Image (tube, rainbow, N blue to C red; front, side, top):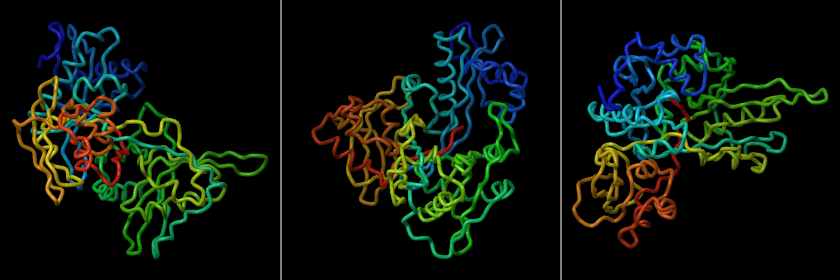
Length: 417
């Protein structure tokens, strides 16, 4: 396939290469090869979608891609190539292997007709040079149940919460999550392997399995509308229960269903502490409580999560809706060349946008990685301009862009890949 240094071959791996490929991936993250790692990696192997960099026939670099779809403002889903399992042996860094594998992966994305790529960055400073920008963030909270009071929102009449075993999670989870993720900007689908992992049907050699508990919320019509999955510890203080509960997954198709799930979790007997480690950055959770001060942001709140790389500006920008009518001319810089150019973004009163090549003077100049930061609405143009990441070329363009790109809520991607 080429794409790397002259003495390195970058190509799609076969199943025969998988053991060496898995070793390199683990070693690049400073892990010894875990027992069962090869069999585990085989569960995710798709011919043609895993790349290896080979030095004299020995694997020294890894990258894998998979099919994704990202929900964008307005509710459309944009097909994307998810890039993951990126690693290079320490002995072969600074030799252009990552650049070669990334170029090969992005070329393949374009060849397959996709205009968007996505990844989750282990290190912030690496992926901007390949055109990726952080597009979603997440928050987390620690709740002192004894101080929090009750959920102030009135209960949904006729709804109910019921316990689920893991078979029930597998039965109800996929369809319910599919409904949820189409309402949540930034969300991605969960493949069957995700549900197998989270319910213990497939065990990861990289983490200790602890069976969770789960509940389902049904609305007044009896339809599943939300789900929560959680663990609890077994702590006692001076003879009294002092149980901590960790919410590992909570999603709902509407705010009322989410509030009912939180009401249930915060009123469980013996529970004095609740940790919500992954919620939307503007989730109303603290404001649901009598005492929002009892709901404290966890360290790392606001961290970046899903990174996006726009490869086809017209297609990707045309897929989302906009917060107001207007016209913007964007001068996009892309050091890899996929998305460079000057583009006119036109949004109508209905929020529908269209993009076409432009020759008139630009309103804003920015790198394609910064366009990825703006795409889902996690950042504002004015904030990025203040950081020197957007250059205003015409007076008032930053304010106009913020009006067009504004979204009702910030994006959230609850899942990794």
